[in-house]
Image 1: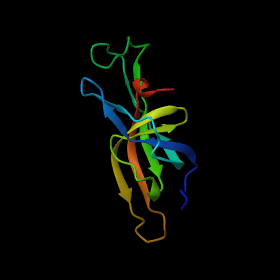
Image 2 (image 1 turned 90 degrees about the vertical axis):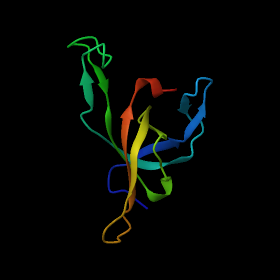
Image 3 (image 1 turned 60 degrees about the vertical axis):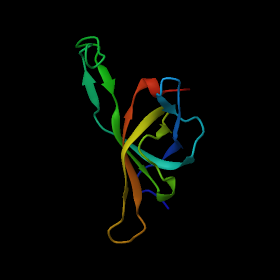
Image 4 (image 1 turned 135 degrees about the vertical axis):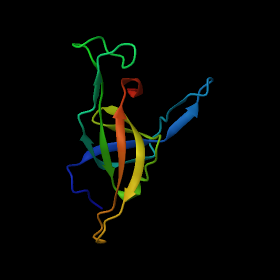
Length: 121
């Protein structure tokens, strides 16, 4: 199986266990490793400290986002994290896209967002 986009090394981590407050942390053992493709979008930027976490017009909080494409054997799911390009990305809206002509180009795609609080190493 191959993706038609330039490859990135991807490590997928399932959600971890809940802490004493019930907050689920990312897992620490990869469930899948292989080639995928991270396509970044413009993301969001917010200068407001009371809502977005920024510190004014020249210090906005920035949330990178985009899409992650993976081969069928990756089996991603919402709530997983992916280690790509040195950062952790949270997966949501995960779905399998079937090649409509049956040419073997099926792939998974997930919306991703990066948050510095998910960078664990």
